[in-house]
Length: 263
Image 1 (cartoon, rainbow, N blue to C red):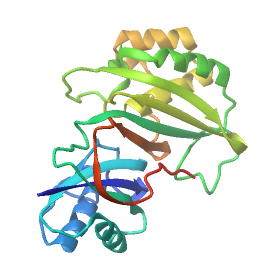
Image 2: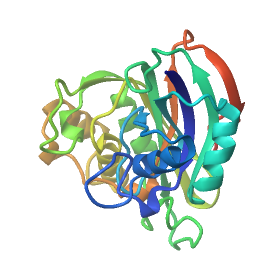
Image 3: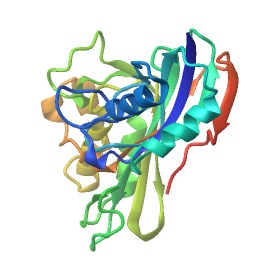
């Protein structure tokens, strides 16, 4: 059996998230369907993690095992010809047999986009949360720094989501100002809880609106109580930007552009 690693970009607007479900379109299900057509084998595609319904990705990573001897470059070219226009394989490579997209991920980077200006945008409507009110971004940035380090993030996860622990380590969290009111929140961590980034963003927006300040934000984090945090930000502003791995993962053959994209 060979192990093929994929770097995947997708617009999640028309999908119920990454993971296969009993009913409805998913990113994983769509790619598995096309891989079966291509290879003649029932392929199980394992992603680095789930993304929410309506969320997007510049750099989702997944792997699958296959007996078919088709080289990675041919697989990439052929499957891209079969996939719908809102999913593309940016890179395909044959890696060591024991590579695991989820278990060996060292960190993940998510990006959330907010369009903070009075008038909405036709072109950002599916890719940024429009907030017309003025926001205090300096206070938001102060609150954002409270996230860095190792914390219990129970205050920022969906209720009823079982995990062994809610402790995650945030390596960095920062806001970048773009043109025409576009703000980009970038966060890198050892891992994320379900809807964690969206809950953090929703609470930071409350900071920007003056409903809470940076010190109160820290108290919410320390409370481990989801009810004290802000709303969950809409999924359409969220992008899985990059998944990082330790350097021991060796590629045998590759094809495509491995750089995370953006627009």
